Image 1: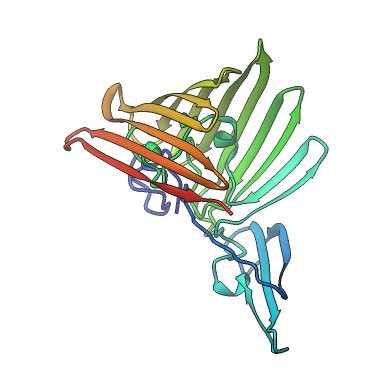
Image 2 (image 1 turned 60 degrees about the vertical axis):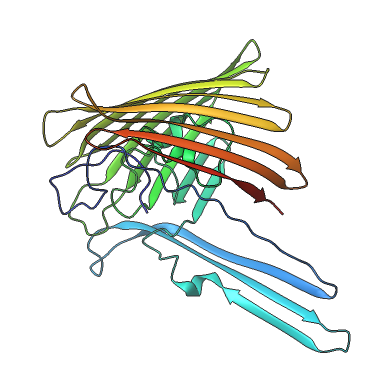
Length: 325
């Protein structure tokens, strides 16, 4: 599913979400997984992956190729000497198509140079800092309100399969990304990103600058500033603006967030607002708190409130536990 970001009306040949306004980021999820080991049992994992470019007459256009296969093999033996086992091949479930992405990522790196492909961030998103800084909820309430923007920009305009090349040196990381329309009907989404991180008097400070463009959608620029202090406090601000290809009204988003972590407790609050041609169309705020109970068990509280122009205010909350094994 495409992540939250900027999208456009007026081009049915392109299939991003349905309008310019920021949509909830549904990429984050919470999974609870339990595993138990027994005597004389064995679990083996093997894997295989491919990345590259494919083309030719059988395709509509040249496109990225990514493929992955993971096999889990499980064997055991009873006290009476009866052997048993099972295996599952994740490549056989159809989730990992070679010209789309099913949640998998791939990378190659050599020194300061790195290539990421698959379900990875475009260069715009990779450079920008989100404003949900501390704590987490079991239902993502703090990031599902109408004012939150995950900085994914135009990522997900096509199939979400992205290739990003980055180079890091002296605190700087520069990136270039592309997402291709596999039908060949539309130009790719191109992205550029630059991030700088440094330490100032015990505070880790980051500055991100991003740019994305697609000829039928428009041009998107973004800037983020963030700082994490040694005393547990953190803060971030990000701003992005879309100059659409269709229409004259620019779309902007402003997000603010603060967080605090002390021992087992983490708390974060964020606020965001979206405007079209200077008029507010949606806003919201979110809160998340996590308390680490130890041993992989944690308690979570979340709240989100949304104010959308022309609709009643709405809120949401969650309270629960997470288990990590």
